[in-house]
Image (cartoon, rainbow over all chains, first blue to last red; front, top):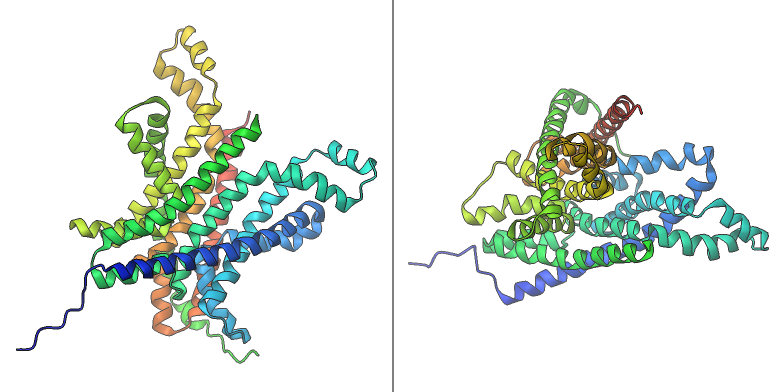
Length: 220
Length: 220
């Protein structure tokens, strides 16, 4: 009699490699969208601060929209909308686009808070010392306001890193998707989920602690 | 460029079902928030006032909830507990996952709120002849409530948005129901666009209600 085919096989060392690769993919998509999103977000934040009613009519509702929708809906919507307007994006590209806009919409508020954290007298002082508007932004607002909102920015960045797990809904094999695939094969959910969770935790926990300690140090 | 024909009719036909699913979304989010507030309050008080294993458990809970993706937490309640022979229904998975997450985030907010009320106020109220219970319920809690009111509102919005992850564990709340209809009719974009609007309206309603309540509660 033929031996029955086994569909399930145990957790093997090479699966660790698979998980590691997926973890790198998680890191890559997060780093990419956080860095582009932060640059965009700072620009949006500046527009929000300077623009007054022009911003209220254009940027504010758009950013508000991205903040009021579940990320997963945004991802599915964009992934299915892109082909309609003739863009053929793979899951990775769609994920980066949406995560970037999502980051930008969160960072915009943080950045505006940072600009507002610099008192007007300070900025008037720098202008009356002969600095141009851009010099004032670069050498006065950026260091002081940046410091004030750095912990908040870290919070946003870590949030996006964790939310990048949702890109799996488009079929991008990042860490959580990879662990789901492995669970289906090995039937060892507890071990694999613990590994995946430990990765996220060991990335997020030290950074958030570091940001909190910086905040305490700067508050003094 | 635009050779895609939009078909909104099937979406309109299933709109009543979607709205019903939206009620389910709201239900699970509200339940998770109520449980989350109770547990979060306990966690915050334990972390502030106790030593020993209970404090260790509370801290672990808070850090795990804050430093791992919400989707991971849902998977853990969904598949991870299956390893111990504990199989929750999709509804329970989402409720447990959301409660775990909300409790962790709210605990930090509550902790900040309690720390913002100076100890001297408790001592002053005690020396005025109040019991410890009176001092807490009449002096501390009202002030803490004011501080954490807006974070609670934000968390409520997050809970609604996060419940959309139920789609990935087979729970048919708003997102899950949408996916179900979308995969039956292949009108993915149309369905998710309508769902996005429903989410947006829900979020705006929550924020509006919270603002209305705030003007009522905090008149002076």
